[in-house]
Image (cartoon, rainbow, N blue to C red; front, side):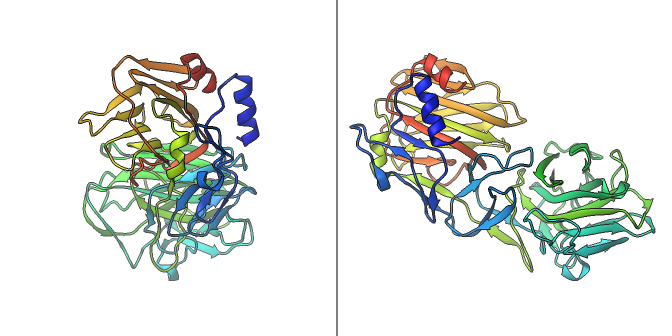
Length: 455
């Protein structure tokens, strides 16, 4: 959402002027510029109101042309990805640290630590652009042998799996020709994941066809995302239940959406499936792509924060926090905005606590029990949500997409002087998603204003 559009919408809604607006657009290394930030006296903060950005490694984003690209350390990631596969309005992508355990994530060949069965692979094919907009994708074709047609990363340098840990593998695939070029299956090595779970994807329809396994696994899940130009990022998550070493991302060619795990078939040599960007990481979220070569690679966490002069933008006795969030990975406790005094004693945190609950913590002077206003249902499918939280002593209200949830619980307002985006102010509870807009008010908007602002 452009800054001018947000301002115009606020004027149409007859809203008070925010003390701070952040619509990610202008940045440099280590800085994210605030287009509007004033003290309570109306003085423009200027450079002192800009957010500090810390990330000690490179990272990837989707640029305005719709292609993935690598940005330098400390550069805020304005991500243009939309689920339809075309570049949209930029949103601030903030993630925790992540490590891609799959070696040679882009060159899928036997000489680069990949195990290959009954396949021929042309690396760096000119037949199609890859998600970076270059020609480094892998063209994968079955041989005419009868049997399983598959490949997996970390063939000779295996991954050490830990029982009880959740792992997520992902890769980009594009439909080529023939039945084996339309469907693809992701699975984990059965000696480490004895539930034998798998997920089948239909690249022609762009859909998740099947998620299955032989035994219950409460964390088994899968998804597919459209990255444009025919490319889909396919994800499969499961829990390891047998510690030891094994291969990594397991890609299986299949010829029907309902195929079972690792099916046997006689290959048609003219069939082609395109693949790129294999990733294996701990946790139940497929984070932004991390390229690897001869070893694993880590993307450090981003910390977006503002302190000092920001205290004039934060309502001390009353105020309102607003955020527009593009949610796709609603897993665990994730913070959206945190106002703190630099300690854990005084804070206001807008966050998600599960796939179905949005809560705001009000903590005052080391109170032993955090106070939460709770929204009972958040669709786990994700999407764009407008969220606001208004606070005043003993007078709190949350709003989500036009509906307000007021509380009569008693609690004072904590004194705060710093702000963090997409984490709790102490470098944890990262949102792992995209922020489209943020605003602060030094007044407690009325419930009617909250409903209008979030509609």
